Image: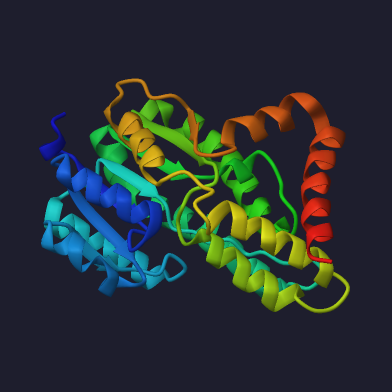
Length: 282
């Protein structure tokens, strides 16, 4: 299909990678429905021709309303990019379970509900593609990220099962696993980490991790969003896309280490980094 005949629905499109996906796809000629809670931050997308939608993925009403608006505007959705998500960081002991549940509501159950709402139309046409933005965090783990990593590990398994279920209906499921990317994610990590665990028994550990985050995300340490946007374009354009794509700083090296070197070596690597930043703060 030509780009001009394809409708792409992107959640979490108001900033970061989602915004970059939308801008690039619009320039490539795709019809784009861009959804996010902060609809006021998508005026530039609207000016370029996108259908912009106010949508909180944890709200059933918002999701169904957005899907209906897209159907009225375009008739169908050919590609769904499940990008909405955030990172909840802090010591597991300190994070209230209500907040942990909300992390799952956004990173897993919200995108699942949106997918459920769009699948009947894809099945009817026997055509469609679902691209789930996971993370290298779906294959590895990092300090103070227990709840975030739990959602990404869950997304990996959920996507694998979905791929098998939808094969006979002509719908393909693709996972994209970004590494460290230069977005506002670093700030999103740091604030809750400090709020939940900045004082108390984990305070020193938190300060070391905050220094790591500052170095990797907020001082040019990550890769530009374009490296992930390029993967999204590959996943959309390919007749037979891969089940997984990964790119971005540390993604391949850390996932390789986790897979082939085992828990002890991976633990040692993470502990070595945090100990280095802990010593520098003393």
